[in-house]
Image (cartoon, rainbow, N blue to C red; front, side, top):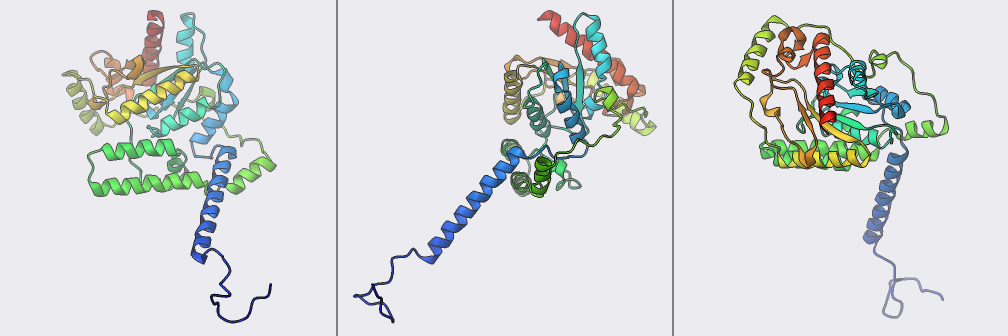
Length: 348
């Protein structure tokens, strides 16, 4: 059929083609959908990100995951205060042979610690029977010095970003501060979802896998524990002793906020689904608001935050600052922790 040149008329209508705008929008939607699918696929095959400090421990645990019965996971209050070899020896002396690993690290609060724990459980460690978790409230704050680093971004998958956002919305912060924090966490979630900068790393790992870089980490022969031999300075000692005297006057149970309670219930469920038993520990602390005496679903809580019951754990000579025990204090804390663990096992 031959179309005449010139403008369209009733006898010769224009071809029935979709409008340019609709076609452009359709192309844009298809492009974004393809990008989202590609990012999701990359997220499934990409290796664990090389987060400073976290990645070496992750690699060590992955390589030896079937060797451990007990996993300690938490902040610096685990990292520098729980000695796996001493714990294993104390429990073994009571007739229960265990092999434990300390996956504590500086500044590791939930939601980050809960994300990491789920990644460790996904490795399916064959012998894991107990997961000992540092009982700390959710912390949605972002350190401005590290807000754009891998350490801040790697745990921002959708579930844990939503957890942080729920906690922000439930907080008493101003509307402006909430909006700013929501935007920052959302940006980190997008960055994590898009796997920015990880394409070449993934392709290189798939096409030319290389053995992990070996480095002599101080914690490696100590099963994840790193001691501190420093001592508390005189000025800090005075304020620490004042705080301890305040705790001796009485500790009151801290209420679990709804968002925190839901997060605890979810992590307890995931640990149990992996075939292990969750145990929560309140490390020695002068923060009275951390006195969480009960968690959901009957999970046990070992509390060491009462200076009247554990005076040695609040001795300034056993601390390197107000919040952490030094190497001497770590020996005392590990001994008390092993005793609580055995007491709980015998009671069960």
